[in-house]
Length: 215
Image 1: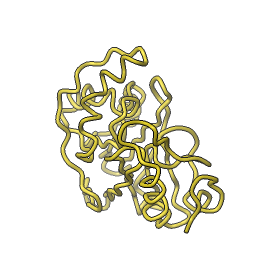
Image 2: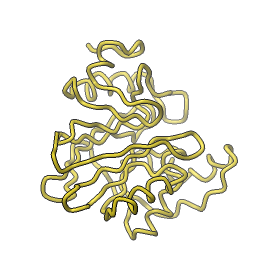
Image 3: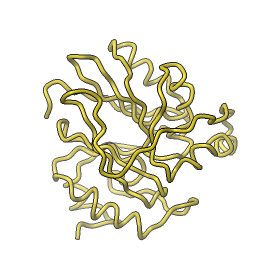
């Protein structure tokens, strides 16, 4: 595990979606993954720790993960990044939010594109690899930090469960393939930060997840 990189994950918003801040303790440069529909939890973390936000990353386009993205992007003068297959979901977030009683501003930003397999370089010694894991949504991705031994997976994989596939763009076949071939290929001791609930490890889910076993 890196001696300079740190992370903090916390639930926030209407569905207690988990967002994650990763930062370099030496330089104070930080990344925010999934601001949720209530980003105040994470802006407080940034301010309390004296961090400088350098990037906003999105695992997928569902409203509970992205509802507060535009407000954070404007506050910190950053363009969020996501897989282009979920841009439509991102733009439709306010209409989805109304079904939960949320009154969100229009999602009028066009996020920059993330590509499967690319390495996002925040600064020297601080990078994240993009892993495209469609199934829950077409553009769902995970963010892997080899230095931390950590992967932030959105709603693909949970502690003892997996993401739902009955929403628009979902595919059970793709979800299983993504988990078995992309996530389960990571080292067993990799910490998994899911979009909801408790963290787990790749090894535990390979052994015990009742929905998707390792091949």
